[in-house]
Image (cartoon, rainbow, N blue to C red):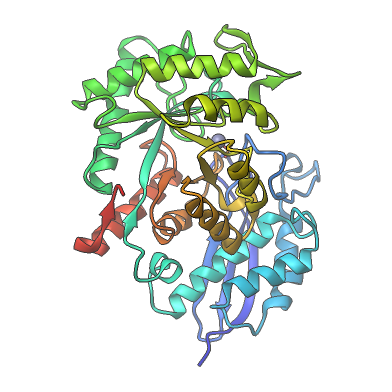
Length: 421
Ligand code: PGA
Ligand code: ZN
């Protein structure tokens, strides 16, 4: 018997920042229920699919999502009732067609993605498979390489750093479980170093420390010190990855490094700065080193550094195959950040990753700064052949939920598990 959708319901829950977000339950006629929750960004790209907010100042400062919840309950539920829950692509297409806009503004990408993810979960249950195996098939045995965001700046923390994310990337680890241990031990070593130097050890939105450092350079110096103190070799065991999220300090055509007092920079100055950093530090990946509309800056960066390091487009590409195709043609980067809620359905996200792989690009599956306890993206990363994953530092349970799920998957796969290729 086909597993069919009997009912769909949704409710407003709170994310890791205490802001409302959408949770969806997909009920099957065999009694199974697939549940999923939607995350929310702070440094969002302007071309992302629209996250529908109520705008009612009397509730949650206008951030409520009751309209999105109503769209699930009143418009998407009747659309999908009775369908075979395994028809993911058809279900996603039906929701896109009902929405009718280019950016899911009518029903809300939060409503649509909640249903899309919960449909995948319910279908996996009905197929008696773990989610990664349902979505990825028998070849879904590759664990993603984690990038762990241990120092938070920009829009994620009131710290001294203009750049949003300084991540450790345990490239020398033999498997995911060890990579996570390398990362967690380095995180704890960094904690001790910061405390000894009299810096704050409170954490930002993604669980990284948020100290008032004197410069962006100091952040890299401290990370190298922490890697060594934890007993690892910088560059060989653990490298550094950055996400400056440059759109957040780009104003009137210049990059304003005001928090660190480094002054205003042109796009070319930013390339020179990153080049000097890549020479000085074991940096192997830089995401959004330029602003989302500065395609010329991205292209100059890729022309200069693209054969040495990974250049990742996040706000530039917004997980949208249209922009990724442009990025490939124009050689604007050599990797894409992948956020399910930037595009709004599971099947469109799979299509974006397919395009990256066809072009020989890297892909980094990413959480949002506002997260929930849902670990959907961990299974999704394994389903998509591993690649890389960034889901915060080694603390805050909404981040650890994803890493812990990957520990479970690696154990479940046993000898079949693959890592690092
Ligand atoms: P966001 O940050 O979720 O606040 O957009 C993550 C990122 O920029 O990669
Ligand atoms: Zn980013």
